[in-house]
Image (tube, rainbow, N blue to C red; front, side, top):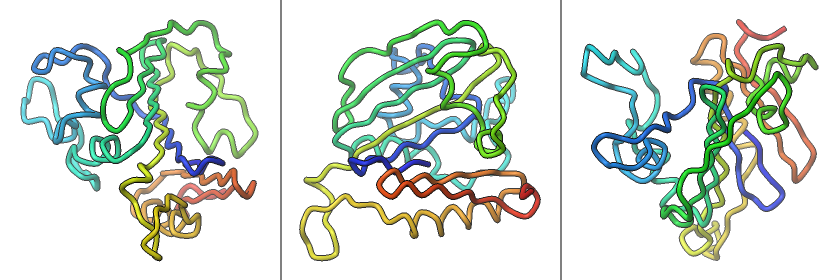
Length: 200
């Protein structure tokens, strides 16, 4: 998780990556569907042939990212899957352009560097794997200043690093082996959160 100088936030993971093929029901990419349709997340799939997305989830059941998108002035999302970088941008929940796809090759590519797991970055090691084997999602959002108000009732989108750190502590404690990083580019202050099972 990174708080950027403009008070946007970037959340990056090295998971499977949001699917990007055409969604059979919406006719647009699954990435666009997940970011614009409520309950479109694939966490609890009942089709036994397709398999369940997750056995357990602490998320918002397909609501979270589509609501973040709708309440953000800007959302930029990149997904790396099957050796391709899929990119899409939104303004207040509406796509600004169709999904763009770029083929990534080799083992070193700056576009893929952000998907290196945080524990690898913190140990200063370079991830030694082909880009075709990498996967993950990186999403940057800037909350809509016309929607969010600060404690004084005036428009405000300033994130509190300490509050994010507390929430990340809770998540790390509840998920064995999970490594999280918090970078505040406003203060140049990097912090890592993890439970005792992954702390070195």
